[in-house]
Length: 372
Image 1 (tube, rainbow, N blue to C red):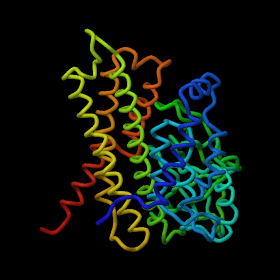
Image 2 (cartoon, rainbow, N blue to C red):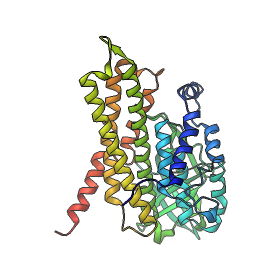
Image 3 (spheres, rainbow, N blue to C red):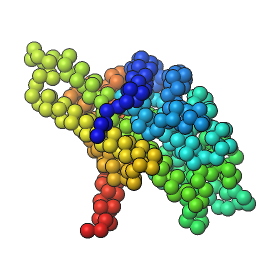
Image 4 (cartoon, helix red, strand yellow):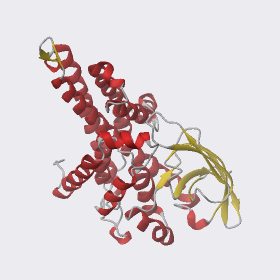
């Protein structure tokens, strides 16, 4: 079986890497932090001009007809440059769901804006999520709270999972500036924007549901699985970026007349971090490949591969981040040096949608439930 990327996939990765590598520099990120600017709008617009925001959408909606594999190629580059961009939230957690499960009206209303960069999307998947949907005429009325929602204040539309009194699952499309929605900004480890959202009698029409009550669980599973694989792709990029920075530093830093990279203890620590990074990448691509095949109806499901990938992204990612800090010494925690961004992103990605223990338990439970 050939797992090499096609020419088109390699071109997508090269294009994303060139745009992000040229624009998202340490100096630019430092200037944005000093100006308290959370979204790199200029780079986002460049991705739109290069048609990298619409690559995962069907051609009928104006996209390029690719899928989660191609999204992961871009997300790796986002992680490698720690670029403050809502690519995962907008493209994977939002647009891919709307394209697959949304009505004709919903797709026509939202997806063209995603492709041209004018519409940012996000999904409320954070911990302590408790939103209840009660019947209200031909639609529904939402009440409750959603925490740690990424890019909520920048988003034009939110995807909000909710539970009905009968125990069904709904995935609702909500406008954050609509009546009954309030947002409170939260401080995060990564520095990326998140918010606590409160819903108080928010009306949702039947046309603003993805899948409806009968198919809501399938929609939510699709959302969680694709977002989790996207998180793993970001972590693969973050780990590689931290490792490259560490390799450069240890090659240039001299002690006792030699680069510290030539010291046996340093080389061993860096080698372990390299192995972890390759483990994160290989398990992520295995999960992405299975998920793409599942989307195409050619594979029975990717749940086990996704849990394995997130375990590696969480456990291996934190080891890479700590190794990079250790090998940099004191300069690693200096906010005038770029490594601190990789450490903060790695810790954030480690725990988002469950850490290593959570995914090992889920994998173990499925294995234990299989007939002997």
